Length: 512
Image (cartoon, rainbow, N blue to C red; front, side, top):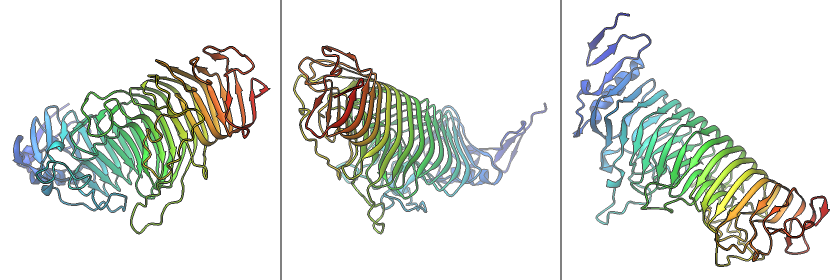
C-alpha cells in the first residue's frame, strides 16, 4: 500500500487506510518545555481537529496549559512520554457554566479540560495529564478552600459519546473527573493517582446514562469510583467492571448526593485494596468503606447488582444507608422527600482486614429499605477485646447526618447489622473475627420478612449469641448448623430475642 505524509497548513495527514488526520500541537506553536504557556496553541489544534474529526497529537514533552475546550469530533492523543501539565494558578482557569443546575454549581466552576454540549470526543494515549493539584492553595496559610478556586482535571457536561482511555490522570486540584448529565460514556484502561488536595475523588459519574467503566486502576485520597446525582437527573444504565481501586475514603460509592437517584447499575470483578499513599488528607490509609450505597437527599436506588469483589483493608466492607439529610440541590428547589432503596443484589464478596465497627444495612422507621439480598459473602474482622455496644443497646438513627460508614460507631453485631428493612435474604454468609469478640455475628432489628440460609459464623464463648433478632417478624432460618461452639441443635444459632415483639420466626422448621 502506498503511504505518504503531507504537511498542510500546520498539520499533517497520514494517508493510511481509515486513519484520522493528525494535528501535532507543536505545528501550532506549542513547546513541550514545561514552562511555556501553550493554552492558545493547543486550542488552535483542537479547533482545527474538530473541523475534520482528527486527532490532536502530543509528542514527547511537557506541555503547560490552562483551560482547554474540547469540541465535537475531536480526539486528544497523548503519546507515551507526553505530559499535559495544568497551570498552578487558579486565576488562569475561567469560570464555566455547564448549563445544568446541580448541587455545587456555585463553587465548582473550573477545569483543565472542559467539554460542554459536545459529541464524539475522545481523550486517549499512553501519556499523562497532570493537574499539579498540590500547588493550589489559598492565602498564605496554604490551606485550600473546601471547594472554591480548584479546577477539575476533566469536566464533561451535557455531552454524548465520550471516550477516555489508556491515559494516566494525576494530581487534580479537585475531583479528578466529573461527568455531569452525559450519555454514552466509556472510561477504559486509565490509570489514576489523586493525592494532592482536598476532595480528590477518582471518578464522579453524575446524572449520566449509559456509562461503562472498565479496566481502571486508581488510587485516591477521597472517594474512588463514585456515582452521584447532584440534580434531578438519575444516574442509570451503568456498568463498572475489572477495576482495581484504592481510596482513603470509599472505594466504590453511590452518593452522597442522591437527588434523582441511581438505577440499573452493575459492578463486577473488582478489587478494592489499601492505598499506596499512607499519608491522608481525609479518611484512613486503608479506607473507610469498600462498598457504600447511600441515599440521603431523596431519590431512588433500585436494580443494583454487585458481584465478585475482593475488599481488603477498609474499616467497613459493606455499608447501605437510607437517610434523610434532605439537602436541596439548589436554593430554589423544594426540599426532597425521603428516598427509596430497593432491589439490591450483592454476591460473591471476600472482605478481609475490616476493623471492629461492623457492616450495616439501615433504613428509617418511616421508610425501610426493601428487597436486599446478600449471598456468598465472607467477612473477616480484627476482633475486639473491649466490649462494644451490647446487642441490647439502642443504636441512634441519626437520619439527618452525613452517611459515613462509621456513623453509628461500633455496632451491636460484629459482622452485619440490619435495621428497618423488609424482604431481606442472607445466603451463605461466613463471618470470622480475630481476638476476642463479644458481639453476635449478625443482628436483625425491626426487620420484616427475612430469610437466612447457610450461616457460618464464628461465635466466641463470651458472646451472647451468633445471631440476635429483635422486634422482627416473618422470618426463616435454615441450614444454620455451622456455628463454632454449637451445642444446641434446636436453637441452631443460639438466637437471642430482645423482647416479646419478635414473632413468626422459624429455625429449621421449628418455631423460635
